[in-house]
Image (cartoon, rainbow over all chains, first blue to last red):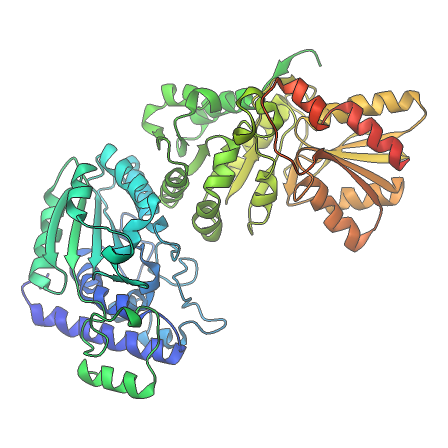
Length: 275
Length: 309
């Protein structure tokens, strides 16, 4: 892998972000803020970490990824498209009637989507079950799951965290997209989620805290997680909501709002893309 | 008719037998394996049993993940918590993905008994049958429970199987010809049809015998599968007997009675009376005392038939 080539991943992540902006603009609704904060993590997973084959999405023994923060699915659609699962232009039908690209991902409609998500917390629970399934199958494959920080307020997250620690699911790697914001404002003003790492450690997890926009740190944490035996790993990735678009960064208001044409054009320009 | 066996006991036996046949069968529970009878499977196949602890939502979520790893999962807890507390996980994770999870829920209905209202669910069939693609089954005795459980495990996709705590008479043979999605006519009759499931099937047969002495000829159908609903057998009953009484250990809102009425009101309107829990909570007591107090006995079916006749 070309993991040392940061520029390679940064260029893909920039394309993913442009795809997100264009798709959400065309849809007229959607969740740009949390999609942009997750773009680098998704790029790292799909392009530099997971054992997957876009030509054979259901390959035996493949690694699997679950987007538990299902509203960030524009970034997942973009990453899958850029990875070659389908032409990325296909996702411009996002949220349109009859499109496979649902507002929250449907595994039965889009190749590469391993779990239908959208209702927060459930993807994490299902990923935990997948990791148990991997243990039963003993095929050495891994399960990756991306959670939002606000999502940590869901009770099922901690039910699953407890079970993953109990069953010592070392094939499970969670990433928390810690952008600090949710719909009603800052996480800790809505319902305190910090400290995050301490909570997971108390549930028997190995933890790492990184800058979620730094590919060197993302890959180092993923490597470390793969080496950990006897416990699941969580990477708490500090991110910026709306990352890469100046007027969206750190604005809770861009959680679930589509840009108008002028805003979309400006965003694409800032990201170095073509409208 | 002498032996009384709980359908949950039949489930426990079925799992042990099926576990030997099917290496891809995984069983899960939420700290109730002694009560749901998954414990025998857990002892025999410890590598294929996973306890979620007292966490029903995560039970259903993890069951989905294991099913998506190529396994068939039977996930068990009390019906109240399976269908109620974990409803949205069953809908959005199991149902929406078509995952191969069989929710085998025990201690349904009033015959939970002494545990009282918090544990007596009358809503589970209503909740489960609103989920697209969900097969919903309510067997009436131990023999039919085993036969239907085998078909549930052999089919692809999600299912909900309602099982009881209390011993109930066994009147099916172990090799009875029952088919998921097909009602079974247990008794011919021309005057009124009683469509029942679960423990009310035995009561319906008792009621039919009593009514025969009064000259009322009652047809009895075991509607063990509430979804997909056997509309052919209902249409035939409506056309040939003109009156239908439904009987279930469930709320009269949303369960078997509603399912039958939804169909007949559209296709073949007939007079219907519904025996079941009448939109109230239960309470502590012995199962038979509770059935008596809350109107889910043969006597209540007799009264309903007489009123329609």
